[in-house]
View 1: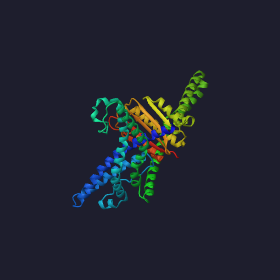
View 2: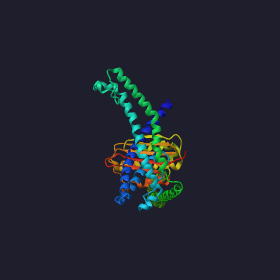
View 3: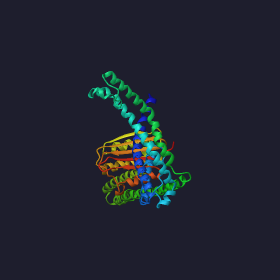
View 4: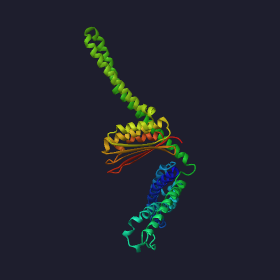
Length: 408
């Protein structure tokens, strides 16, 4: 049964992958047709002004496929914008590889996606056929087999058995079709030999700068918390203790009241200091692990929160802390800005990466430039060589997907 469940889960994941690939394959076909038209018109010099735009369209589609492939496996870095100038762009190795990819993928991606989508649809149609075969004339035949006359329940049940065959084929062949659909991108979209290292260096330089910025922001936050909160409380304790010391000689009854105020101020200072420490590295992560810490966040969230955590092995403390703060900040944004009635949080470990997704049913239109904490989340994630993807169309829903490397 475990093997069957694994095959079914793999086929469902493969179907999701194939449907997404069908979308990018359709875009690739459009970009290929546009590039072909521009190339033909360039022979008579009419299409030369449109050539850079065609190359940018191919790059845009290729970047979408790179992002999709990175979500399902090893990350593929993006090369940046197309070089200016047609001759420079024509010599760029990325452009040449992308043109080969768009020609290959527009065929393989479409065929694999259509076949992968058709098998489960045929399975549902044929399996349910005995329930509705009486609604159509017998001369119409079976679904997809017009010459098969259906005269009674026995023939309809035979069609249902055919649907079971389609279902078995979908479960068995969908992962292979998904791998076939991914093959052109895995082959042609990664950087050419010798270019990968320079891109990686540039990426690490950018993430290092982001890490330094995030570290500086965190230090400023801690300094403000200590200066504006704990330090003022401790100053108040010192003043109250001095007043109590003077009152011991003048008014002993008043000294007891002042000492009580000093004790209250000290307790408040301790509480604020615990809050600052908890903001650096929450002790609950050590005590209860990531699942327990996130359960505490979900339980204290004002908006109803459904939490699903599938992390069998502990990750590094820094990775768990980053995931914790990402969820905490995301839930704060949901409560303050989204107007949502529910929020779903899912955390799982897969292929050496910790995957965190937060989705709410709010009004959407989340914008990183409006100071909603999203920029801070992105910087914190990129500081650990992770990725954050935000999808928030107007009207919702808003979904944030975060990937953090956590070893194999």
